[in-house]
Amino acid sequence: MFHKPLSQVTVEDINSLITNKVSEGTTIDYKSQYTVSSDKEKKEFLADICSFANTNGGYIFFGISEGRDFETNAPTGNPEEAIGLLNFNGDAETLKLEQMIRDCISPRLSSVQMRRIDGFPTGSIFIVQIAQSWSAPHMVTYLTKHGFYLRGNAGKFIMDTDQIRGAFLNADHWKERTKEFHLERVKKISDGDTPVPTKKNRCLILHMIPLSFLRSSNLLDISILSKRSDLAPILSDGFSSRINLEGYLTFFPPNSGAAISYAHIYRNGTVELAVFSDLWVNDGQVRTLAIESYLIKTVQRFSNFYQDMSLYGPVAIFLSAVGYKGLEIRVDSHRMPSIQPKIFDRSVVTLPESLIDSAGVPADMTLKPIFDAFYNAAGWEKCVHYSSDGR
Image (tube, rainbow, N blue to C red):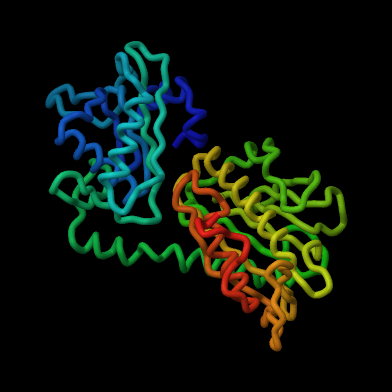
C-alpha cells in the first residue's frame, strides 16, 4: 500500500490515507482506540492478525477514527481523522503483542511488524503490518476457543469447512511453483540464456524466492534498488549495474565482455545469483569451505535486504551446481582413503530447497540442509564444517 518499508512510513503517508479516503477492506483495518487488555479484546486482535495472514496480508492502524453514516450512524469504513493514541508506550505494547502472537497462533506466525509514529493531535499512530503467510492457514489458539479466519471487504470472518480444506490443499502450492521456476532457470542458464554474457565455465546457481513470487502485485521500486550498494554479486570487488525488463542487474567484473558472476533482482523480489568460476576448484577437487563461506554471507546480506524492503515472511532458497560431474569434495582433515572415490555423479546437481521461515534466523543454520545435500551428492554423509548445535 505504501510501496516502502514500514520503517520509512511518515506522518504524511498516514495523512494521505485520510485525504484520499482509503477505505477499509481486505488489507486495511482502522481502529480509533488501542484496547487489547481483556480476554475478548485479545482474541479479537489475534483473529484480526490471522485473518490478514490467511488472506493477502495488510495493516491495522490504531489511532485513526472511522467515519459514520449520517442517518444510521453505522461505520462507513472510510478514515475520518488521524487522532493518535494518548500516552502510548509503543515498545512495551509491541513486546506484549509479539509474545501473544507467538504463543496464541498456530502454526507460529513470524511475519508481523509493528511501529509507532508520533506527530498527531492526541499522540501516536500505532501500525501493525501483517504479511501474507506461506504457512497458512493459521489458527487462533487463545484460551479454549480455536478458530481459522479469513478477511473480506467487510472485515474478518470464520472460515468454513471447505475454505479450511482448500487452504490446506494450497499450502504446498508454493513449493511446486518455486521449484519449477528454479529448474527452468537452471536449464536456461546452462544453455547460455543469461541476463549478461558470462564466462563459459561450470557454475553455481542460487535462488532466493520470497512470498512476493506468488503475488505479482507486490513489486519492488526499481529506482530504490539502483541506489543501493548491497546488491553485489558473489565474488565481486566492485560491479557494474543496469536496469532491465525483469528488474535490476549487477555483475562482475565491471565493464567486461564476460561476467564471472551476477545478481539479478526481479521486480517481485526473487533474487538469482550465478557464479561462473573455478576459484574453488583445484586439481579435480572442490574446496567446499570457500563455497559455504561465500553463500552464507550472501544469503545473510540479501535476507537483510528483504527486511529493509519489508518483504517479510518465509523465503525459499534453492542451490544447483552445473558442470561438477567427476569432481571430488576436498576436505583435508576429513579425507579418508577409499577404493571407490567420492565424486559428483551427475552434471547438474539440483539440491532440495531450504526455507527461511522468519527474520533473524542465521544464514548458516538455514543453509545447513542444503550443504548436507551437496555433500550427499558427492558421497558424503553430511557437511563436515558444522558442530553439533548446527552452527
